[in-house]
Length: 353
Image (cartoon, rainbow, N blue to C red; front, side):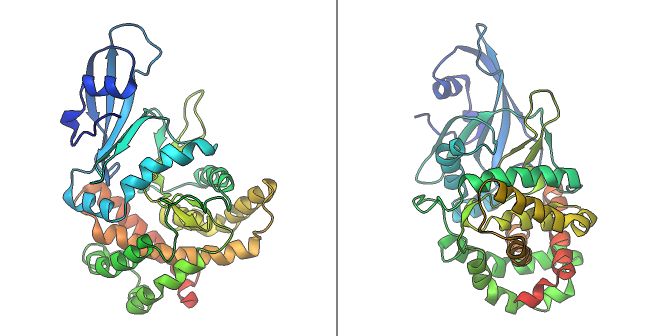
């Protein structure tokens, strides 16, 4: 098994060769990925120059632990690296919901890790700052239907995948929300509704009950960070309509959490307001077409409102514990907080506490 590089300087021609186990490289060139992409990790495109013609790729993407101490610490606290390596190894082969192909991976007991993946940089990355259009939301719902139906009530034996509730991950979310709220107010106060801030302690106290309501049968695989910067939209012949990356936060629970996350964090506000009911109907119809008839539209809407309310916990953990000094990171975090707060007010979600 290939050694784990501690930084990008350790990604060498010899290391790539050891990962792939074939071919002979003349040289490689690393191209760091855009600032703000993969905030919890460090990522680069590797351009490969082979000595002889080969059917091996001419470029790959390498993903390793974050260089930023704050972000890396959060990733380790929530076992994000272990979950991502485990997803690509154990679960990705079981679904038609497409993510990049993985050529090699490894993780150690200190949660140093790497993923060597297919380069899909010719896809168009979604923008959480711009926000998802209606067409983009429809593609995302199609993806989630494939992902969720693949694992519907089939995850009991997957030990590394935590539950939405009553797990270490769940407890860390409560702690992260309580600790992070002040930083959210410091950096993002213009986007925090007074109605939510006035219920601060009440909200924090009720997080475990919200988690439990999103962790009822039937359970499936939740992506856990289903936002636009993790969406890659096909734009060339032969492309899939949508690839999704960054499986660092998967959970067992109600798949509607991913829908709520997408629409309350990433969808353009007017798109959500005009189309959220039809998008949820699209989701339920697709489940029924796949033979899943025990989840009604009425129940999905009820759970969706709970999911939108719980997504505030996620927004506070992200915006309140990560380093907001990165300009691009600050831009999408502010949009996330703003959209989620507006959605909570629009849907009268605080009445669910």
